[in-house]
Image (cartoon, rainbow, N blue to C red; front, side, top):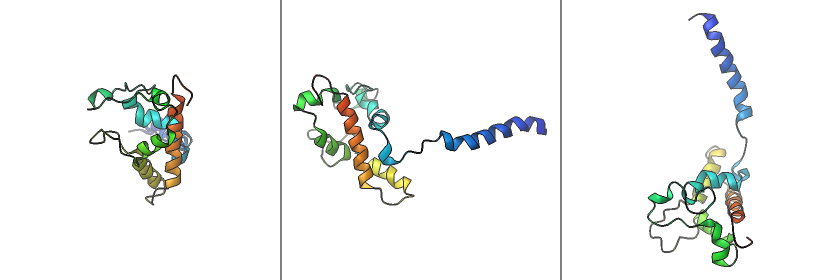
Length: 145
């Protein structure tokens, strides 16, 4: 292959090598927004608007809850309970085998990866779950969160 054919390829390689760090988001585990986590981990079952109509909801054995009505169903937004359900400290009663993943464990593994395999930081995981729950609070309809 002649040098004139390789030149465009080399230019592209240099461009992407220089641009990659600028394009990569330098966000730590605790800095990930609740909305980003919801869209990444929750929307596939709960739907983009939290109504329980995500594309994977039809394949589950139990109906996926509508997250927009939590404040109405509980009388106020159940932040503490929701945090325990998401991070795995509270089982989901009446569901038999838990179909919803324990996201606290997942987030802790991601935090550990940031630390080069060291033990994940519980504080950053709690903050991340709190961000997610705060985002779910913004989805509430019919009552103030």
